[in-house]
Amino acid sequence: MMLNTERTAGVVIFVALAGTVLAGAETRQQLHFKVGRKASVSINNQYGPISVKAGANKEVVVTTVLHSDKVEIDQSHRGNRVDIVSHLFSGADQTSGQVDYEVTVPADANVTLTSMTGPLHAEKLQGDVVMEGNTANVDVRDVNDAHVHVKTLNGPVTLTDIRDGHVEITSLSGDVFLISVNGPLVQVNSSSGKISYSGDFGDGGEYVLTSHSGDIDAIAPSYASIDVTARSVQGQVENDFPLEPKHTAFPIKAGSAFAGTVGKAASSVKLFSFSGKIHLKKR
Image (tube, rainbow, N blue to C red):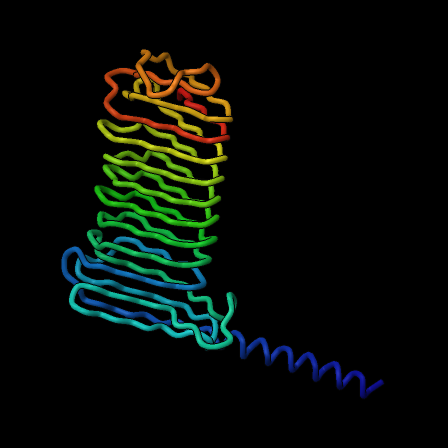
């Protein structure tokens, strides 16, 4: 009996020590880079989150948490460009190869973020934002007068308070949510994901929302000024707005297509799907 108790105690001690070793493998680093105006910052992280916010005017600060010794940080700083890469060693997987990034950049910096798993987050920037991921959850908010380009496979994408933006989003099956997004070009292309737009469509922009089989919901206020065309080849379309009719390149059929103008028709809105449902809603 005593022997079994000693063995049990030994196992408990071993497990506790192993837990200590694993916890101790987590490493925190902070990197500082001096940059000028319109700096370019690129971060490539195979596994783990990247969050970028506006900070000091002439400095990029990168804080990382490495979850094991199976990964290291490669850095390159040349002039006004900063490149950061999570370098995986042999045997690294999604758990041991994870790195968490918290980054501050000058507000006017151009940022490129890549992560297979994410999530990816950027806010309060005025430079261009490029994000790419597979399952990564993408969140961009409070960005002014910039290009925002997003590519994902099945990760959801949310853009909030994007003003005067040039927005292009491509997703295979991830849902896309646009909240208070306007600019000269807002373009979303999804194969099977849902597309949801909630805003006023700005003044003088072009908005093209396209999905093969996903539904498209567009919600706008009664004072919206749009020239709208909507069509679903095999799906259903609904419209809550009184439209002034206009000519189209295809026949208008109740329930599958509609077209017309509201107000001064300042912005062009095109909603297309092959088999998804389309609904233009009045807020």
